[in-house]
Image 1 (spheres, rainbow, N blue to C red):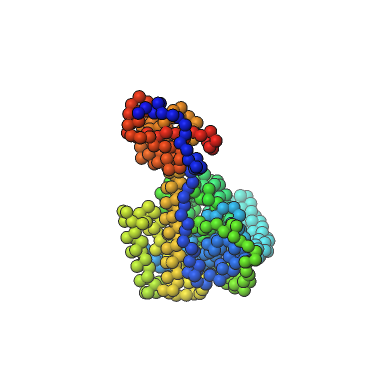
Image 2 (tube, rainbow, N blue to C red):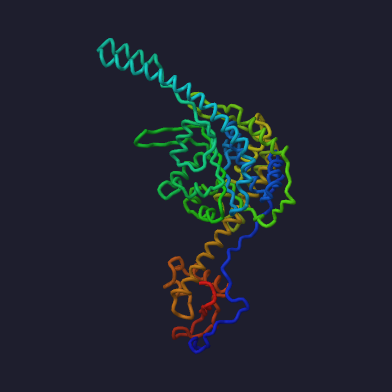
Amino acid sequence: MNAQDKPQEQPFTPEGPQPLLREIALGAPYPVEALGPLRAAVQAVQGMTQAPVAIPAQSALAVASLAVQGFANVETLGGTHPVSLYALTIARSGERKSACDAPLMAGLRDHEREQAKAQRDEMESWRNKHALWKGERDRILSEARKGKGEKRTAAQADLEALGAEPEAPPSADRTVTEPTFEGLTKLFAHGQPSLGLFSDEGGQFLGGHAMNSENRQKTLAAFNDLWQGNAIRRTRSGDGHATLYGRRLAVHLMVQPGVARGFLADPLAADTGFVGRFLICEPPSAIGTRMQANSTRDDMALESFGARLRDILDTPMPMDAETRELKPRMLELAPDARTLLVAFSDAIERAQAPGGDLAHITGTASKAAEQAARIAGVLTLWRDLHAPQVQPGEMANGIDLAQFYLAEASRLASAAVVSAEIDRAETLRRWLMKRWPESEIMLREVVRHGPNSLRESPKARAALSILEKHGWLVPLEAGTVVRGAARTEAWLIVKAADHVV
C-alpha cells in the first residue's frame, strides 16, 4: 500500500485536533490545623478574602519566621540551624495575594514606621556628634602638619584619645523587596541583622538585576549561605573585603505561574539547592467561588496576631553591641519530638531510593526533616519566645506541614516534566504545520530534520506520541509505502486549515 495512492482527506474526528494542555494534578488540601498558634489569624484572612487558605498560611509562616529568627536556632538531626524559612507562593493574578499578605504584615509595617521615626531623631543627634568629632580631628591633623617631632607625636596621642568615628544609627528597615546581593550586604552591615525579603510581586526579584545571568550564581550562593546561617563574605576592589557574621534572612515571594515555571526549571537554581530550600505551593484557584455573602470577619484573631508580632519585634534581639552579630540561643528538641523527627526523616530517606516516590526531587526531599524542625521551631517561638524545647505537638505540626510542602514539590516537579514534554510537542506541531512539506512524518525524519530540541529519539518519540494522542497525527498501517519504501512506523499529519497553527 502506498501512502501517495490513498485519498489525502483528513481523518474525521467530532472535534478535530485538540489543543495541547499541561495536565497538572491538583494538590492536597493545606493542613491549616497544623499551623497551631498561627491558625486563627490565617483562617481570619481566608474568611475575609476567600482566597485559597495556603496563601495567607504562607504569609503567616514567613512573617513569624522573620519575627523569631534572631532569637534562637533550632536543633535538627544534622546539627543546629536557623529557623529562617524561604517560601514561594504560586498564584495567578486575581487570587488576592496582596489582600492576604497585607493584614498579616500590618504589625510589621507599623513597627518599621515607628522605628524609622525614632531613627530620624537619632540621626540628627548623630550628625551633631559626628560634626564635632570631624572638626576636632581636622584640627588635630592641621596642627600636626604644621609641626614636627614632638608635635606629631602629641597629635598621634590626641587622635587616639579622640576615638573612633561615631557610627550612624542602623537602618530601621526590616524588609526588602528587590535587593541585589551588594545592596542586601550593605543593609546587613549598616542595618538590622534580621531581615525579610517579602514581595507580592516576586517576579520582580526573580527577573531582576540580582538574578540576571551575570549575577545569578553569586546571588544563589549568598542566599544559600544565609539559609544555612553562614557568614556573608563580600570582596570588592573598591571597598575591600568584609565578613558579616550572625545575620538571618526570611523570604516570601508570591509569583505568577509563568514566572514560577521558569524558576523551577532553572538548572542552576536546582543544582545549587536554591529551589530545594523553598516551601513551595500552588493552591487550586478560588476565582469564581468567592461570594461576598460567604465572607466572614474575625477581627479578634487578627488583633491577637498583630499584638503578638509587635511584642516580638519590640523585644531586643541578642546581639553583639559593636558588630551587631546575632547571638541566638539553641532551641532543643524534646526527646519525644526528636523521635518523631527521626521516624519522618527515615521515611523520607527510603522514598528517595531509586524508583521511590521522591527519587525525582532528592534535593528537596533531603531537606524535608530540617524544614520540619525549622517550622516547629517557628511555631514554638511564636507561642513562647523563651521556650527551652520544641515539644512533640509542635514537631508533629512541623512534620505535617513539611510533608505537605514536599508533596507540592513532588507534584510541581512532575508537572514541570510534563510541561517540558508538552512544550517539545508544541514545538514539533508548529514545525510540522509551517515547515514540513510532506503529508506524512517518520521518527527518523524528526530526529534528522526537526527542531533542535527533538534531535534525540526518545524526545522525538514522546512528542510524536503526544501529538497522536491529541489528534494532530494519525498512525499509518505497518507496511504503508512512504517516500518509496514500506515503513513499519509513520504518521499522517492533520493539517486542517481551520485549526490553530
